[in-house]
Length: 432
Image (cartoon, rainbow, N blue to C red):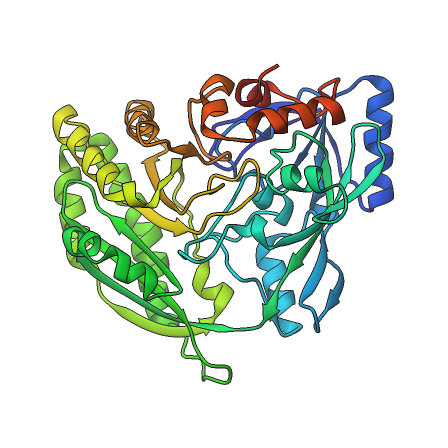
């Protein structure tokens, strides 16, 4: 037995660890556990903030089940093993002349973990990572291997792309990639009022748009990423600027400020105001995956809600009102991103254009009052929580938020009637 803890330190478990090095070993492990009546849970990078990865049985660590199985440069379809980390996949794809269409802002997750929890990036015309999936191979609760796609077991495919680890263990993922491309990044400080007034123009006029609002101020940092023509010379951030902006200011200094304001919370509004004055514009061109992802070393807790895109200004205004009325002081910026509607049963963007509002709290400070308040605000506009980030919802309230919640549960009941892949988190969000 060994003790496993997730990245954020919000979940832990004493588990029996197995490191399958092949799909055959993976299927044998699941089949053997089924015979013994043991529970099984596959774990990726442990970057989910919830206890979705907890098990009281066998923990499958998929780090040895990694790499590209096959790649077709003509079609752009690439099949990868489930434990492949996104940062390794992106570099390998680039060497093949390929890129993923969209990515989130960190790349430490495994590809299976990222799609299973609904990880997404930003782009009003683009979906989350799961929308790039064209086929999956799943190890079911009896140890059998099943392939699903839009043409093979389409109901399982509709569920398994954001499957929460509830209906099987992902063995391989086939992704639709495209020719490698670079992005021109433009980062600049701005005002919250201007950003919201020009929101439609920003969303329609950029391939990828997001912004960070600093609570207790009316200031934001905006990020606009747009594709450049093939053959455009890369102009990445210089080594010194990268160290100053992305290491010193964004991580080391930010951590020290949070340590200080944890002891003296009254300093938070002033610290946020100073931080916005330190923001400076920068423009660069680099490989797409290097622009999308950033390094995060400061530990925090996070909750993120998908809301109807048109509701974003209202939700931000109500968060600001809550902070003013409650007197609660928040040192982390609020991250706001956008995505297109999709057709994946448990995707947070199912059936609607979505805005994503992510709130954070330093890991040494209490997060629950703030998160519960934001959750209540988001629920009032039909918000859906990110499956891998902290929330307080259960099956009763989630059933009303997802048209296919009952369909997903029925499929789970059929494929895993003994709850071999179950845990307390899945019981809470899906029901018994």
